[in-house]
Length: 516
Image (cartoon, rainbow, N blue to C red):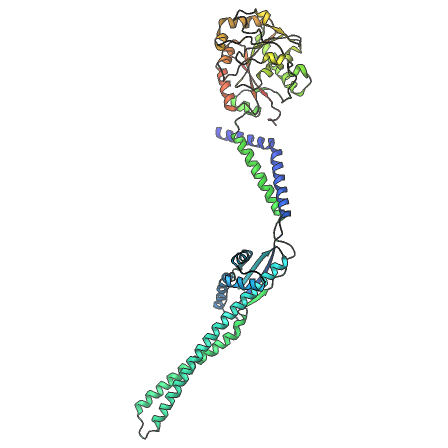
C-alpha cells in the first residue's frame, strides 16, 4: 500500500511539474515544428519517377505452367540485382551525356532503387532526382539500356550455341556420307562380307540418329531465339512526377513537433528528478509532515530600512504575512497569560528568515499589538539592516556590560514595534545563548511586549537555533521554494522536534513561481 501511495505521489508530482513547465514544453514543441517547417521549405525538392519491367511476358506455346512462372520470378530477382551493375550504369550515363567516373556512377547508384515485386514477374525501378523530367529520363534510359544489354547477351548466347550445333551437324553429316560410301562399296563386291555390312549399317543408323538429335536441338534453339526478344520488356514507362516526394513538409512538421515535445518533456522530467528543492506545500507536508502555515509570494526588493508591509502595506505578498499573523495570534491564546516567544528559523542561510520575522512583526504591530523582534543571529546579524537601524548595542550588550537592556532596544517607524539587534560580535555565540542569563533576558523581554519574535540562525549551520528552541514557546520554520532542499528541511524539522516545543508549521517563501 505504501509503495502504491508513493507511486501516486510521484505521478502527481510529475503532472504538477508538467503543468508548471507547460510554457517551456509548448514553446519547444512549437519551435521544433517551426524549425522543421523552415528546413522543409528551404530544402530542394526531390522527385521520384518509376518504371516497371516484366519478365517472361510471352511464351512460345500455350499458357505458361507453374515451373515457367517460378523460373520467371527467379529471373526477376536476378535481374533486379543486375540492373544496378556498373556496366549498366556506365552505359546509361553515356547515353544521358553524364560523366562515367566513379563519383558520378556512385551518385547515380544512390539515386536508383530496384525492387522485384514479390510473387510477380515485375521489376520496379525508382529514380530520385531534383528534376521531375530528369528522374523519368534516367529511369527510362536505365531500363532501355538493361533490356538492350540483356538481349545482346542472350542473342550472343544463342548465336554461339547455334554455331556449335552447326559444326557438330556438319561433322556428323560427313561421317554419314563416308559410312554410306563404305557400305555401297561393300555391297558392290561379288561376295560381300555380311558381318562388315552389318557393322556399317549399324554405324550409319547411329550417325543418322545423332544427326536427327542435333537437328531437333537446332530447331528448338531457333524457336527459342525467335521468342527471346520478349523475355524482358517494359511494362510501364516512367512519367515525370507532378509533385515531389521529398521533403514531406506535413510529416516533418509533425515529427519535429513530436520530437520537440518529447525532448522538452524529458528535460522537465530530468530536472524534476534531479531537483531536490522544495517547490510547494505538497512537498513540505510530504517531507516533514508539517503544514504550510503561509505561502509568501515572491516580491521585488523594497527600499532599505523598511520591511515590505511597512513600505507597501497593500501588496499581494503582504496577504501571506497577514495569514501568518492569524496563526501566531492563535499561539498567543495558548500561552496566556504570558506573551509568547516565537523562534523563527530556517534550515540554511538565505531562505528569508529575517524577511519573515520583520514583516510578521510589522503585521502584528499594524493591528495594535506591541511587538519586540530580537536578532539572535549572533554570527551574521541582519535584522537591524531590515529596519535601517544601527547595531552598536543589542542582544549581546548586557552580557558584555556595555549597555542595559532597555538602552539596547530601539524603536522603529512602525508604531508598537521595537527591535533588539544582535549587538557587538562575540567569539562564542552558542555559549552566550546557553547562559542562564539568556533565559532571564528573554523573560525580561516577555514583559515588554505582547509578542517576542526571535530571528534565529539556521538550524543546520550551528547549534544556536536548537539552544533557542528550548527557550521559546514555539518554532516557525522558514523554507524558500526552489532553494531549500528536501533533505535539509527534513533534517531541520527532525532536529527541532527534539526540543519538544510545538512547531507551528512552515512558511514557504518566494512561492509564486513554484506552486500551481
